Length: 496
Image 1: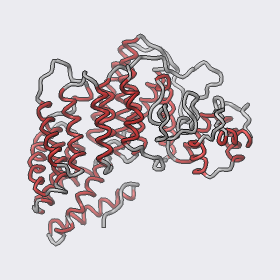
Image 2: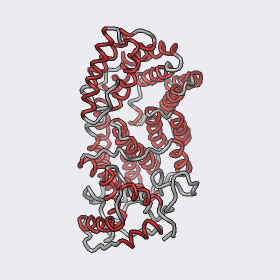
Image 3: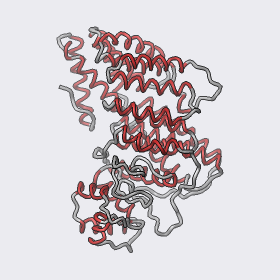
Image 4: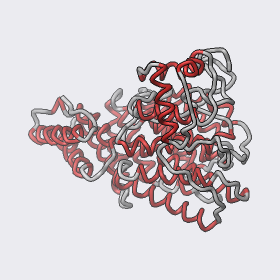
């Protein structure tokens, strides 16, 4: 007991509106449902948890996490509740504590357990139709500060599984415990192939249709990590976990579950580090940076990119560095920093064509010529908001990207069409802009990506000045009709 209030638990307790007596009754009822009928909690004990910082024994923290998860409609972990014994209860992000907040980084011994907890709660919410919109997205600067020392420490393969034979250990609500057992290289190879299948599906159809399957697979892998395999197999298994977590994060971002996505990116970075793959950890954080630019927070994206590039270490291949630079350039363009953007894109081009004897990792094989062009188009299109002359370059690169889009990655093609359309409208070429926007709209009907609708919404406002153009006027009506249907399915609002 710290004697200090547990501010994390107190904040969430105040948010849900329960009384202390009501929470005590709910804990007893939920514990019984989870197989612990002997648990008996009362109001005074709840008061000690909140006001005195007392950390209850298992299974209470997991029971509380399940209750708050269901009530708030978002994943709430025991770290979020300030109920991890190795952490410092009562400290919030930004307090300057020597220990980083549990929701952004955690001790090596917690990675697999955190992974299992979080995916289990996510699956429970998914089954009940809750979307997790009430969670809070951490600032990019806070995230990079919290993970800096952790990412720069030496990676070590550590036994970090939950204790499965402990009679006080409770299974997180909403999923069945994976029975830990040894697996071999063939099973890991099959898992690695499944990642490729999921990755291709996401690129083709968007993150909404297979997100639950990826989260479920990640949950299973977390259970496998509970068994200590030989080091070479354990490292591969950690890398599978990193790939799945990064993909779960990307799919969550793609459907608008932004705080959930950020948590998965952090899990991916932790898992990659456990597997000794620093470049993979940096790539996971670069996804969090792309998320920040998409959400209109480019300055925070640059904070994250500094961490991603530094933390990836000397093992990072030139093409990976190239990809990192394109994200940095997009952030710079979104801030109107044209000179810096052009310099960064030049570095990206040089690195992209640089030779390397190292084999390209699977997670980088999708960064091809058309992806470089697509990011260049997006950067110039973003800069054109500040400098309309940049629209010409945006069209140039978008056209090059579209000419090469023939591998089934339809979502990327949609983004290229929208970059081209936006650049055309900025460059006072409304007829051509309407043609490309129509191409994007046709493809979006069979894609589950919410991000494409976000980008369509951005493009739509550029059409207002051409509303007297017949082709553009018809396009605007089609977009309004399509967006109203998306709104009906829980997507974005219809533009004015």
